[in-house]
Length: 472
Ligand code: UD1
Ligand code: CA
Image 1 (cartoon, rainbow, N blue to C red):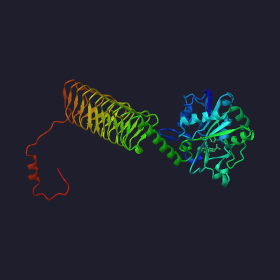
Image 2: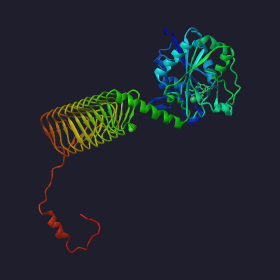
Image 3: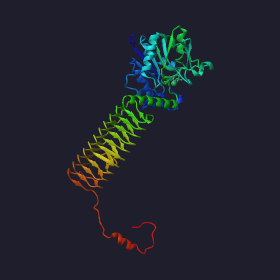
Image 4: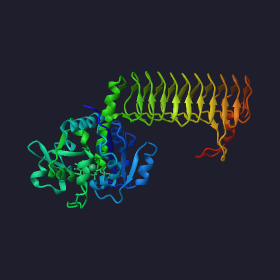
């Protein structure tokens, strides 16, 4: 069979009333991306030309969320039903009457490439005017029912308009269709809003095509879960759960290890390489990459973060837009903020916050520190409780700590300031001036010793009435 040229329309103009949300339904997120993103990617995978998206409710917001992607947008305002939506895009597909038309509801995030491709193939084999994807459900609930006479599809009836007998049908319409354009154009104009919702139903096209003696075929989805249409918050959560499971299974099949995958979230654009290990309750978002041999979690959240080969992110860490190079170790309880880079085999320990900081190869900040706007060379040791004072109330200033320097515990580095290569800073110092390479800097009050002071105090207070508060 020759590969026919395809074009497609995605219907995304509906209000999504049942979500009870101010946000357009198709912009609600699953796996860190809008519902519509899942549908667009699946439809795109069949390379339709053109690919049109019908938007209406919050059309500007939807359009800008998907701009620069080569999609054509058409407005349907107000949204008066799925048939009305397809009519709104008429000029787009009428321009290519020879191209088979895919029409997909914008709220079916579980639809897979393989199923859509199989639907197109079934359509071509049947030589039908239209072919729809159906699914047989235990509880067909509010879905439109597929009515057949003998084997052939006769009509789709919406649940609200169905008789008690029709409601017993468990084969439902998934809202995913393939049409030949000329017969579609003939019948679209005949749609009438004679139904419970007073809308133009795309589903009525089936009856109208049949009335003209044309054939309508249906392909039953191998996995009925793929037909899930998201109309409510609960359905959104169910779609998220199913997609998460599907994603985690694919990641495991590729050779990564997920411990207790039901508790792990891996975003759509995340890469987990073979032999990486993800521990329970870990969330990987955005364009995060976890390389082979790396371990992340438990209870870690990574956003747009690259974790290098054999690196580890320990319990309860948050990392955003940063890079952790090979063999480095972060956490537990570390917060790595955007534009940070942790060099090979470097170590960031517990209760350490890094912001816009580059930590050089093998350098360490093991305990309780805030390092911001800093460039730290290789083999530097940053003692417990070190703080860069990078903000003067108006502007941020940089700190440089050069190769092999040793920063004693409880140091404050008042930026802008540089500690030269191999220099030492004594514990408890407030460093306000540059420290030359190889020097020792002490920026603290000299210790004072008062011999015998305690005994003297005891004598001075003896005989005085017992005090409840402490006085010195
Ligand atoms: C629709 C089908 C139903 C099917 C179900 C599958 C119709 C009449 N009914 O019902 O048979 O079982 O999907 O999930 O088609 N939209 C517009 N403009 C509008 C109305 C809707 O673009 O005026 C878009 C929505 O944004 C949505 C899609 O079309 O992405 C489906 O609309 P929705 O209201 O969710 O249809 P259902 O009632 O679920
Ligand atoms: Ca729906």
